Amino acid sequence: MAPEKPGSEETTDPIVVRLRRLEELKASGVEPYKKKFARTALIASIRKQFEGIDPGSVTDAKFSIAGRLIALRTHGKASFADLKDGSGKIQLFASFDLLGERDYEFFTNLDIGDIVGVTGTVFKTRRGELSIRVESFELLSKSLRPLPEKWHGLKDVEIRYRQRYVDLLMNDDVKQVFLTRSKIISLIRKFLEEKGYVEVETPMLHPIPGGASARPFITHHNALDMDLYLRIAPELYLKRLIVGGFEKVYELNRNFRNEGISVKHNPEFTMLELYEAYADYVDMMDLIEELITHVVLEIKGTLQFEYQGVMLNFERPWKRLTMIEAIREYAGEEVSFEMDIEDLRLVALKYGVDVKPYFGKGKLITEIFEKAVEAKIAGPVIIYDYPLEVSPLARKKADNPEFVERFEVIAAGREIVNAFSELNDPIDQAKRFFDQVKLAEAGDEEAQRFDYDYIRALEYGLPPTGGAGLGIDRLVMLLTDRYSIREVILFPHLRPEESEEDPVIEKARQD
Image 1 (cartoon, rainbow, N blue to C red):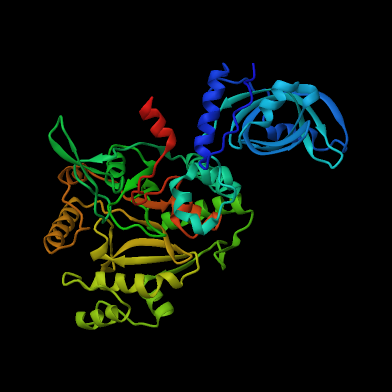
Image 2 (spheres, rainbow, N blue to C red):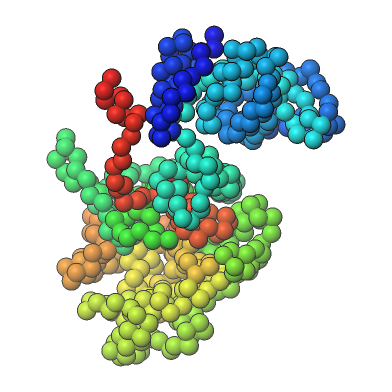
């Protein structure tokens, strides 16, 4: 049974008005939060089936649909509304003659944002609007907070990220970003599985943070009385699996790094990491090229597209440059290990590098590349042969041990892939860990820790292995033309918000 007409006493707070309506609903015997509703169709399927009927056509096709009321227009004894479900929206037509006085009045006093179930027949108005003639309806969930009348985009960017549920309701293009993200991940999984890769899961709580140079989050396990670290990378565990006999593995993993927040960085982010036995970094270059171009073509329908006003071309083969060549080509600087370290420091300072006392030549060259070159690359470009100093887990180049067999893919001025031939010599790896310990003692907060168990695993024998890490968030940014990483993470991390008075919470407290 429909409730009596809500009271009309004025108030300035719309939430208070809706709370009053809620109480009137309950007093009238209406349950405002239903358990279930039996839908017989999604709005999109109705549109697909009947969009082609002529204006003015009336059908006897009856459906039960449900969704959120996003518009309501009353015209005396006839009213129109827009109902939106997860697949689309459709117009509702409610009339006094069909519903009767009590139910029609209830319908016209629904609030924008209410979730309702509707049963009715399909027709098309003379103006060509596909609609449902409402024969019956139910309030399924009462909305107590009104939807914003107008969403102001960047002016409300913090609110959009903080209240993503509202952002998704009001902005269809935002929802499309996350549907595209889901499709990208699905395409990656299918591609790798067809290549014989096995998806695995490795720990997110690590006794020793490893696999990347980053500051970890620290937590404590009470039962074991030991500190643990949120995963900064799954690399060392995945390579343990290669030692254990798996030959092709990948993990779509969440990583956590206790670092700054920017348009490129979020403390929690998603990576693809994959490892293949008997492969090297050249094999990884080819695999990554094939994987990304496959995903780009499936999502964009072309390998050439614009990102933030810059044209990108993913057609193979991609341009490949050593780091030294890239610095020469994009910055016009000649750098090398033959240079005096003071001269390298001067070049680094020229580009605004915060030079630390413990920076060696390899670190300085890498910093120069990142400051002077990276942002200039539209790409994608494969930058390969990184300095040993900044690559403690990669295999040395046989002909130049100052460098390692490592590459990154740079696109739109950002690293989206990091990969290398894995270091499988346990003695060399132990020496590299000792060097990292010295860097930590010198003040490098991102230096890697000495992982004794990982060395023990290498002692059993790690076959020649190629590995790669792909930043899922940054790839989604490219393929959805989003500038900030927060636009492609459903719930990005933000500073705590100031508390505000909430009439709903206050009512719950009083009750």
